[in-house]
Structure formats: structure tokens, C-alpha cells
Image 1 (cartoon, rainbow, N blue to C red):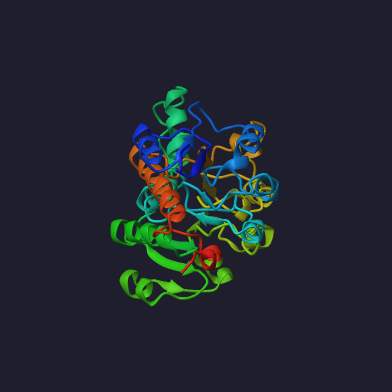
Image 2: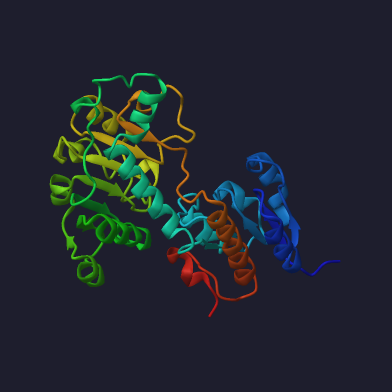
Length: 327
């Protein structure tokens, strides 16, 4: 009989990562596309000591009496019911650092695409609308360089965005977070300010805050009303940090110029979402970290976190559950 801890993996992993987990655990893998169906997870989790992937909530935990560690291959962990995990004594781990630069690249791409109307004008050319005499003001976009960028949530990804914006595009930087960061102020000549001031003064507004009860619908109708009519709004955090109906209304009424979105309230977003029919909105399918190298690195770190936490080693435990880790 194996003495290795039983591990349940709910989504397909690179072969090298599976090999690593097999060295350290008695593993059940999901090798099909997509994720393991919830009903299958609930059926197979009963004897698991570790799980990689999936939503961790009271329903699952009540069926997993042996579970000690839940690992996610993402930075965000709003799919962890932290109160339920605490009551069951289950540690949660995540994957900070490895995706910071990749997500920051995408945010700059959204800023450039929304500001210079890249997707809209790509369609314009491909639809045969580019004719002689049609290259005037109707095709104008807005500059990114030397504009004012407001970042809401100055964590590691926020700093990576700031680096690209300030040093690459000579942007002026405002930010709002839980507290001022002296190193950010000095390195980027940035200014910490209250949210309302940031919204009023920024040309580009980027939301990078994690989703918590405090940040749900952080940006709503009141906040959109404060923005410049020329503002471009970018969300690459979580869909629920923004009141999506308020965003739709702000765009329809011309309260803001445009938006670039990698996340939505419901994912995949319904095909009848009004945002999908707006030419001034760039929409992506939640691909912030979606490069082969970064996703592989995330999977490797998630697997390492799981193994280390099961064996009392060093892992990236989520802040709210660090006190559950044995000394």
C-alpha cells in the first residue's frame, strides 16, 4: 500500500508536472480538455489529502475529511471559501510572482488597443471600408505616451504595469491602494491618491485589485460618473470588481471613451452581452497569463506548493490562512 499522500488534480497539467507529482503523491489526474466536472471532483475527493484546482467550499470540504492542502495555479484565490477552509483546517496556496510580467504585457496591449482603436480599425480594413479619402479624423485614436495612468491596486502586477508605462511610454502615474508605497513613489515619480481623485484625473484607468468583499463592485455608476469623457477603462483583475451594468451604461451614454476588458461578471460572457457589440470595447477571454511559458511555470509552482505544504516545507500560502501552517 502506498504511503504517499493522495492527490487529486482537477485540470490537465504538463507531463513534466505530472511526473513531479507522481514522485511525491498517489495521484488522480484529469487528462481531458477543460476541468474535471464538479460531480466527479466531489466523488473523488473523499480520500484526498491534497487537491490542485477547483472551487474549495463547504460542500467539497464536507466530503473531504482527509484534505489538508488546496493549491491553485493562479494568483487570485476568490474561489477559496477562506472561512470554510479555516474551519476545516485546510491550508490554501497560490502562485504569485510567476505571472506578473505576462499580465502586465497584456494590460499595456489593452491600453494600446483601446486607445489607438486597433481591433476596431483592423475590422475596418478587413471589411473593405478603407477607401481613399477616409483616413481623416474619423480614424483618430488617443495617445498612450505622456498620458496619465491611474492604477487601482498597486501590487506586484501593478508595479510591473507601472514600469512599462512610465519607462516605456513616459506616462504620469497615479495609484490607489491600501497604503502609499514609498518605493513606488520614488522609482516611478508616482503619486498616491484617493480613488475619487484618481478617477477624475486619469486618462487610462487600470483595475488590478484582488476580488474581496471590500472590492466587489468597487467601480460602479458613481465612479464612472467621475471619470473624464475621454477616459479609457481597463479591467484585468476580476470581473466582479466592476459593476458591469454600470460600465455598459457609462459606455452607452458616452461617460467614458472606451474600455479594454480581460474579465467579465460571468465567464464565458454571454454572446448577447452588449459589451461585445461595442466597437470601442476590446474584449478578451480572460487570457492575462495565457502564454505557454507562464502557464507552465504556474503549474510547476502550484505542484511544488502542494507537495511542500503537505510535507511541512516552504510554500506560498495565502495570507489569510498562514496561521494554519505548523511552526
